[in-house]
Length: 365
Ligand code: SF4
Image: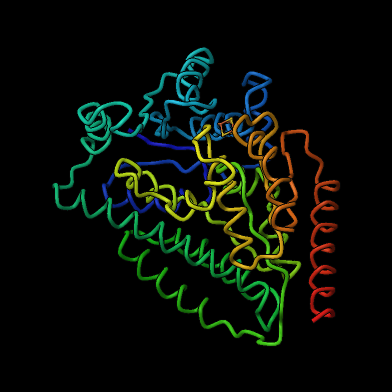
């Protein structure tokens, strides 16, 4: 069995830790690129959302390298994500690929027995004992938490660092070095060392950078290719940014949701504008917009793929939040036709606006 999975931000680092710990062979798809999107767009239904197309590109590039088993997370709706696995299984079958699909749904949706069956179909291929298997799982969660934390610190530091670009290059180095590790323990130790290095980057206390929150559809904001590397661009501009939704947030949220104690801050913040789940992460998007205002951010950028139903609902609510709180929010819609020049111009214009507002507020004090 050679396992593969679609890219989603730092997930590949956590999955490497898990599969190394289980001793299962795997293939990490090449980082998402124009090529992956072209392959995905060629074979996918034209009107399906961007993440589906990129997933297909990731799978096919991994299959070309010998992968025969695909692991994905599932959902029972209510947006198109609920149809992803069925559609993807049929699409790849039609293309002539003979594959195993392991769809990890929550026990609440598929029942505990079926959930354990599906987990067993992967862990059963490992020759490790029970203790080692549990350890591999916990280590991979630790790795995911660490890399997400390091990334969060770097995004914030980009606005405050004394030597411009230091946090960005340290983050890049960290991600590349950790992939050279051969076991989860080594990954954890290395990530802890990088976390310390990142925290020790010298800050310029005189800086008062623009602070921006990145909100929107979970896949598009986490997977850098699909948002045209917006966080890298913000780091280059010296903007301090924050994205609450990360792969480690997703794990925590999924584990706590059966108990109803997941993302309490987001639920509280979204209550006045969108108190129900309408699919995807629209409620999170609304809650995060309010939270970023409360936390003193200067503005927020919502990103979602063309045709994303939940985010269209969120987009229609955001102007009300913006008006009520006097809080600038810009929406960027992406698809395979998005041109980088126009996209960058909009980001730069928005940052410019936030800088001027900030200066104006300081002058009036
Ligand atoms: S949240 Fe939006 S982009 Fe993601 S699967 Fe659902 S409809 Fe598609």
